[in-house]
Image 1 (cartoon, rainbow, N blue to C red):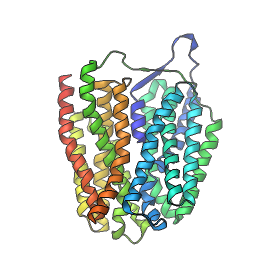
Image 2 (image 1 turned 180 degrees about the vertical axis):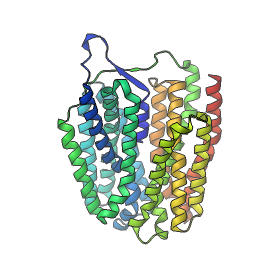
Image 3 (image 1 turned 30 degrees about the horizontal axis):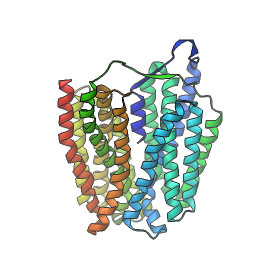
Image 4 (image 1 turned 120 degrees about the vertical axis):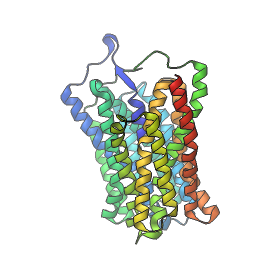
Length: 405
């Protein structure tokens, strides 16, 4: 979900208009703020992917079903989508600092709430930090883009890479503390440090946000024909990403000694997810975006299918790594189609990103429900596999539309 925010931001150009625009950051201030933002994004990367590694431990703490555990993803990502809307409205009138401080404060309250929470309070805590992520992530992205006007794309890419480091860091930190309460307490301290620094660190003044190309990218009628294709694709890709990463440790648990070692499955997914993102720019020098998108979908489907059949720890790790490698490049390629075919400022673009958030909320929750109904926890993996197979014809239609345009 943070990738969604950063890639969307990367399609905008922030510039001043007239004499009323604030002065730009100095180069030193911009570099300092960017490094600070990356540090905060590492911590928020851990918070965003928190449910994946701790889900097996929560199942031991709370007497709930797999379907109820899966609903926690719904509790996180629906408020996160709402938070994104709130963030856009707040940033239209308030400073970047307001959005960052408000969002990180909610994240801190949510993580602290999980330390001693029962099932009812736990759902509220997850919703709280989900809402905070929805507010903080776009505010930080926009602030970094504003601070680095001359190298906006590179700075936002660095921010996204920092988020990936956070996603990978969660499982090792959990194994290091070897305690759910200890891990959440350590994470709370890190979030609190980020909050304290956010109150005082120099942030860029807010300029006016306009599209990089103010010309229409498509007619209004054709946009609303194209938007459902992109919205469905973003729904599926975000859903698959959160479904596999969110359930990896839980589904791998029978093949590992304990829940702490089972988080290796999360780590394998996120490490190769990040590698896939890093490899994509080099791959695009040799093949087209359409071919890379197809390769990404097929690779991810291969990994999910292998995870379904894997029974040993080594094969599970390999399957999660292949799935992460495939999922990694896919979503940014879809976002590039949003920018090219729709344009980042149109209402249809907002609809597409809303569907991405809904996919992130509903598909992981559905995995738990399917596993419980069928009586086989891994049966739920057939849902993201079906989603990836459905992406193949939608990606082909998008590529045909892109060539026509």
